[in-house]
Length: 339
Image (tube, rainbow, N blue to C red; front, side, top):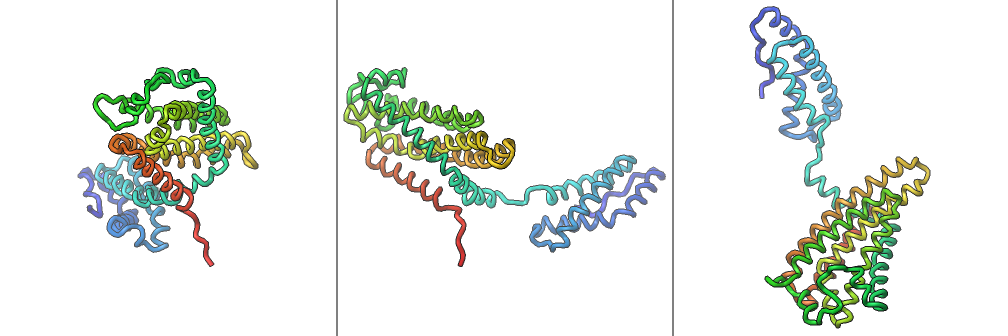
């Protein structure tokens, strides 16, 4: 890349004006160009403190020169050179200097697990609401079986299904098996629930509160149906292979919504708007991780559950995933105590 612009055009007056303009400022341009060459070659880590402090000064000087050159209509070659120089400098003065590897490391090693741990109270409440809803669904169906079709209208598995018909839906993916359409429905439904549980937090968390209970109820109803046919263990294994990740993600999303609602109702010593901004940054970070969990759950549901049909193997995978998530969220990113 050339250190100097191409010589100005031939018209005498314009040439003289450009020449004087250039002579007065080209020392700073050349110094900035040299620093940019060094940054592109060795990175900003090779700069001394004085060089780092001087870089934005030289950038602002070049921008001033560019603005002046454009305002007095100097030759096009000089303006193009300054535009290129300023664009290169902008990247190092204002552009992000963190590499993708460092961004991912910062998120997965610090931001996400620490954000999760900051939601302790809301996580406990979200668990109680969701699985309390599941217990309510079970108890209502156990008392009156007609509740099942009220909670799951149009679902292919009915209280009139035989044991063999229900067992068939827990098998692997075969051409005539209705498992795949149901798996796709379940994945899409749970993703939608997670997004809604988070988004409804802006309404003081009340819809999130209700949504967690409402979506736990069908789970309890389905558990009751299979248990009543003697297939409770098989169904739990079928669900666990992806459910320990997917349901965990829903609970976390619900906790995010509840956290936003709590910070709106009880902003503490800061204005409610600032409290909401802080809560939004925290929960937004956690929800990016929730999206990653739902992606993992989708892979487990789309491949693992279809290919692995042994109940205890499904339990082993689901249990291993739950253990990994708990270890990750509870241990990763903690500050080490010295001394």
